[in-house]
Image 1 (cartoon, helix red, strand yellow):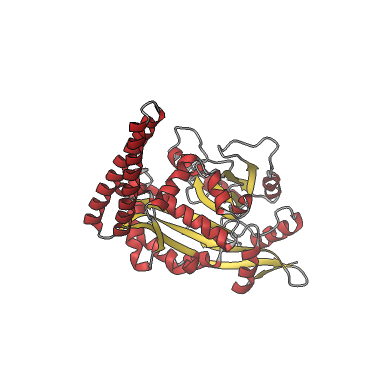
Image 2: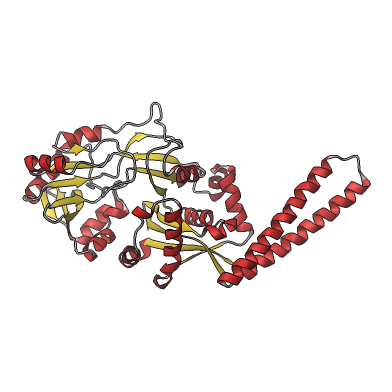
Length: 418
């Protein structure tokens, strides 16, 4: 085996097909780091025939205290102790002079269910921790909460092959509330389109609204971050907006009202002919609720049209699209227009995109890992649960001291956030 630098073509070919491949260790992620003035390297291990056995995207960070992050961990087989040791030992020599190496492997550690509970008899990959600790890595532990300079440990995902790549089977798996919201959006003509770079104001406005509403302002990104994301990730970063064409939706509401009126007229005629049919009273009550709802939707839509024009922006989000997964990185909605619920329309659009492109994993991305009703992201968790997916627990953060004594002193002065 030999340790070496990799060309971008070599690295990309390996990364795109590796089980640990992630948008955070892609070549596009390297572009983001370079744009921020951060020095990066592509390194790996090859066998005697030149086959790549392991690789990593290294980002050299820090000011006075210099350290390196292997973004989303090594791309390697963590059960292959020989290669794992060789790669780690080689990196120790390569990073001589720095304080530590940080990795957060994109690997699940313990099987969880939809509620976040451990699955009895489920998979247990805690051996990954042991293998890394044997090499000198320090495991930060099974942390919860919002990451502080490290990578997401808790995620929520759906797998398209569980539903035979079939949208009809998939939507039947959602809870009733989520399914009804999607059907409602389709009924009233909610559309989804991609945003150009010049239209990022739509995304920023809705993202900022949602961050403020959920008290996530301290972790919200600024506009320059998303502009860089758009530029560096290109087609892999899809900025989407759910919207209404007001005139088209008004037409749909008018058509619906005529159908409801015809139903009411038919009911009244039947009630006159058969006053003994008590169930007709309940049917009439339900129909009148439909009349009220239709009128409310029309009234609200006319107000929205007066304010925004014919295109009414409802919700927006950015999705990282790769052959191995679609990741919902960030999103927001205009609460003023929530009556038409664009957020679920965007989710449904991107899930269908995953099915069309043969992308197996749909990743809703970050959770805090606190599933109690007191958790700050409890509402977000409940929303994601409506899609019937699975909580996923990544193995977590590891730190390899390259100067053990100095690292110990450093951690005494700068302990991890609990």
